Amino acid sequence: MKHQFEALLHEHRKMILKLAAAFTRRPQDRQDLAQEITIQLWRAFPRFDPERARFSTWMYRIALNVAISQFRRDTGSVAGHTEALEEHHLNRIASQQPDPEGDERLCALWELIEKFEPLNRALIVLYLEDRSYAEIAEIIGISQTNVATKISRIKQTLRQQMK
Amino acid sequence: MELDDMKSAWQSLDRRLEQQNNSTKLTRTLSPLRRGQVIQIMTGAILMLLAGSFWVDHRATLHLLLPGLMLHAYGLLMVLSAARTLYLLSQVDYSAPLLEIQHQFADLQFWRARIEQPFFAIVGCFLWIPLTLLVFNALGADLWISARGVVYWFIFSGFVCVAIAYGVKLWLPVSTLENSFAGRAIRNARQQLEQLSSFEQE
Image 1: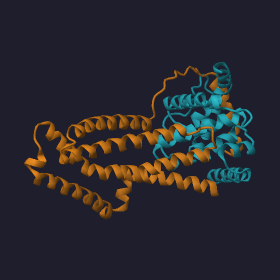
Image 2: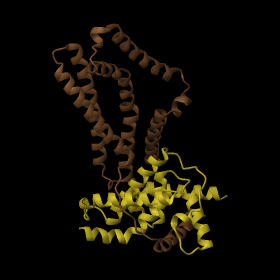
Image 3: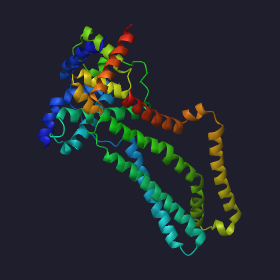
Image 4: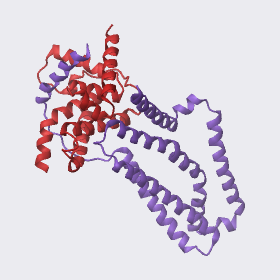
């Protein structure tokens, strides 16, 4: 079981790190969150039933539940995180090869993500991860129509902010 | 930047993460909430042990039996409430849908902020009285026998403490109360519940 888990974890490691980066600011917090997600995944793994849910759905649920809970605990608030950006966000992503154009886009991406409260942030992350509306609905626990409506609202909000 | 433009930026993260050193040292630490509950269980157990042995030794003396029993009951409540919280936390199935789990957490936080913490605060206004009686007894002085009036004053001051707390709650501006530590906890819990329900309804 351990080897199976390690293989799956290795396969999805980048997703965990990306998700951790979407919910935390400092590199240390990001690492702590990734670690907490890994621990919860390992704890829940014996109960994972492939007939009930796809591995990715199961993993996103755990990772996002842990991330949102930790985010709320750390910020002590449910309102959007409004602190000014601290360091360059890319330090958190630990790039070895600077890419000015990519850096700028990632900075903008992080600034946008941080404007949303945790559940909408989860929705954005899942959308960016190219998950289908059906899977997003299953992960969050809302209807597909609701997912479509929310994503459309988020797009609208972003457009308004860009004006 | 449109949401769809964000996708390519998001995907570019993959390349960066490939370059990252992924050696994460797995060290399990208890979350602050769990740590707090463990400390509460230990404190409650010690209190139960001390108070239990005290009232057993003095079960024939009503004015010593009662404070012993009170402290014992308080210790038991501390243990039970912390054990309940730990049990609820251990029952959380993170693989359930996000809304379900976040509701569970928000309900738990609301219960702790609105019910549990005020209850312990009110009891705390009186708890020091049996504790003082026990301490004096351990030092060889029986306050109830030697200075009963003082004990009555203690009880009276317990009621004064509750009245002051209630008065502060009534007279202080709502904004000041909401910015207090307890106020923030309640407000955050309430906001979380409201936010979840508005997310569901939208």
